[in-house]
Image (cartoon, rainbow, N blue to C red):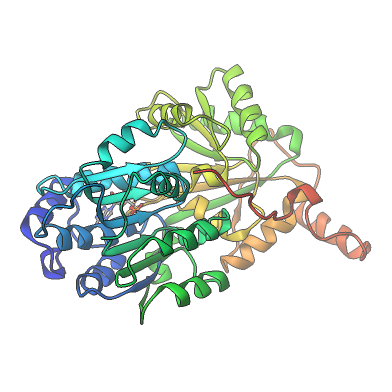
Length: 411
Ligand code: AMP
């Protein structure tokens, strides 16, 4: 199956050739024809499956023969939870639309609105936005959404997690009733279903097989390690394996900053990326990481979500995530688009229950990796027998490690 057979025209397929895309990914093969027919879509696909092109390519095909938008108008609107994702989607649009006369813009918070407003005044065909800045500019009268033909909600599950549901409902009131809706989400969990029911009109449901998801292409290891030894172990892994580019996940923003400082003290070029960093600091860190100036990027889950870093060879879970699904998202940063990758988890004693939950969730055991010079003061067996002999002991991680409802994030 080729891109042309999916119904995409030459100017678009030529731009894909230039990018080295030889054939559609499964999510693209399933989504493009359905979207071109004008149907609503509910698609389960994670970052790394090629989902951005799955909705952008048919949008471009629909837009390419249409009259340009007028004053402040928009024809297709992509809403996505984070600034990084918005910037990445727009960068993809730029590459896919390079042979087309389609105006595309991106708006997100954390930077001055002035330039964004100036660019929106003549109107644009395709707008990518985070919810906060989008509503802000609408309420200032800087945007006219009354001509929107297609709405895409990207990473909808994460938008709900981040508390954007009210923003989404406010947004829906600003759109014309008759429009095409595309909802992309990593899962179809309860709340997503409810949103889908109110938003979508007889949607076509699209899922891609597990085989096509990134988790299968990633070699996964864990090492048992005492908390005090974690930084030393990470330093050793980076130095001994001569890692040039590794994404490291910590549970908290504070933990990300602290680890970054410790790595820098060991002459490892590191930077942290999280919600408390300014937009400029985040972009600089990401660019430094992409062009090789920064070897270790330390990130929290929300900041790392959706980062498109090509062929990331390895990731490290400095802390295991509280939610097993986040583990799958994290390791989705490596082994992308056919490349293989490795994920290492540094597991302290109180995180053992999380390791068990993750193995259950991915229905597969993770291999243990022993690293010379680092032997933990506990084992999985000793932890289990301790649990049996103290039936009333909490099975969960300490309170600070248990899932928290994410605070609404600013966009
Ligand atoms: P996404 O899931 O949209 O974040 O895409 C993941 C990565 O796959 C991005 O770097 C895309 O440029 C790349 N990609 C998307 N579609 C294809 C394709 N058909 N062939 C090769 N790479 C692709």
